[in-house]
Amino acid sequence: MSASLSRRRLMIDVERCCGCFACAAACAEKFIQFQDEEHVRRYSALRTCAALCNACQRVCPVDAIDLLSDDGLEEPCAPASFTWSVALAPCRKCGQTYTTEKLRRLLVEKLQAHLGSGAEPPDWIALCPLCRRDDEAHRLRAATRTFQDS
Image 1 (tube, rainbow, N blue to C red):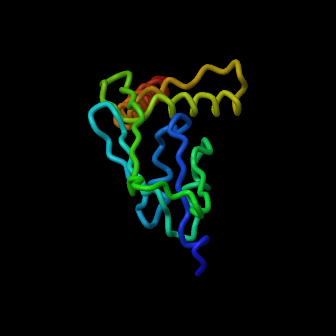
Image 2: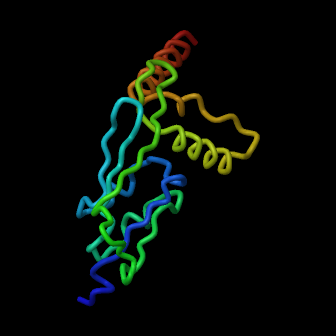
């Protein structure tokens, strides 16, 4: 295995990162990790990647990841890892944080592009999974009662 293939510089555009954690989930070597804390999702990643894949780069929905040849890029005394964070957004109903505002906006943009720019985003986007499930169960019960009353 040649040196140029064995070590690559992991470059994350932290301004572009939407905080979806797809990169961390895709990295079999766990070179990218995240932890949800009170109101932020904190990421840590190794500066150099020895894996011969580009799974993190392929799954990033906002193209925030580059893998560059590490030839001559190593800065003297550069830390072995780096960190960044993305603010978490609260659920409209219960207030628990569950996703990032950047990811919610991205989802709204994608849905509007698919459904038409004049379409209102679905109300479930601002709900956490538990509140979304409860809301859907309530709608289903109401629809069932309406159907039974007919």
